[in-house]
Image (cartoon, rainbow over all chains, first blue to last red; front, side, top):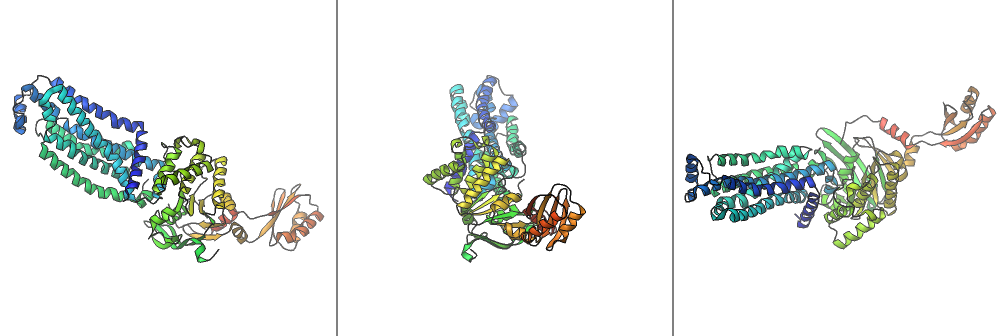
Length: 262
Length: 319
């Protein structure tokens, strides 16, 4: 694989992405919303206490929160729900970019001239995959850093400690990229079969279902996933993604693109 | 010109199937260095498949092909580096400028920065696009897009250029510009394979024409193909509809094989039109015909096309 060719594809992908207003709005707006909403919610919860049964369940799963005041415990529980939301960015942003990129090329019929050059399909696919993956993962990381900074300023050390504990760090910096990879794989597979980016995103959107399930389990206090849990999830997602990648690479085969992609 | 070294493209029993369907089969073809070869055939005849096989975009199901001495199966990357292709649709990145489009492809072909810059300027100037170099391709007319796509196909100075329907869906003015561009490539000595529906275009631009329909049906120069239909003729324009006496007079001239009447015209077939024309004109005048025009009735490539295509049963639809 020639790095210069991959970089060339990557640069062209990004040059087109920044000129696509619809795509840019789907990349930029949600991270801004996701930075603000958790902090506002933590403030709204204010001095309200968790129901005693829920508080007991939360402390049983997170013994380190036992020293928190009633308000800190409520705020920590509220903010904890949003860790899963930070996984949504590496999930949907790569999906959006990959589907727009591949289906856009199908619709404009730009792939055949590219495939007629000495480029290898693995170089083309790598360029596209990296171009889709990096913005999503970076958006998740940057949003998280902004979120942590604001949380420490507004709510003090207790909440800061919550959003920088191992579960958050593993979730954002390990599970996030794994989710991003699975999103790219889903984007490639779905895009080879449909011709409308929105349809592809809806089908590929199935990837966020596990994330929403984790959110629901956390919201009800049934399960507060810790660092080990997020790490195991990351490994599972990675393994599934790598299996999916084989299918994606097969679907991205030069002959398949030219003769079967419609 | 027919020595082995002069052969730029050689296909031997080349075939490609998609599932149970053969798009092209048993194709034996040689294209010589510097030659313009036309691929003519109806939709689904296998022209695009042939182009894709010869540009190493897809692999053959049977047979073999070489381009500039390289086997398409063994050296696909090297072949793609040596050939330029204009696909059926221009396939440009509409959100990028003309320069950015060419810059991208220049990098894919491994051209260094100085070479890229020089060639981009040369080809944009050649196709009168230099003044629009920073405009995004999406704002270009169809003709301009097609010219930009041709510039892209030539950027790496390929030895062989494949043009798939270069003037399809273009207005006459744009088509003229593109044909001029092809003429320019031809003058520069490139080998060109032109897949087209446009018989007039093939007649004007090609040294040889290959009729394709699921395989190679016939290949020859346009003149050779026209001559292959045999009888040629003379068209006589008359002041009015010909009388029975005039028709009989025409039929009586030695060397005339057939006489057809069409309004105020006689179309006369003969093996050697020039030889029989004086006697024919004299006989018609004697019979009372008022002749307004006499010219040779040449067989068109279109007539040859229908003759050739009608002679072969369908092998099924191809891609």
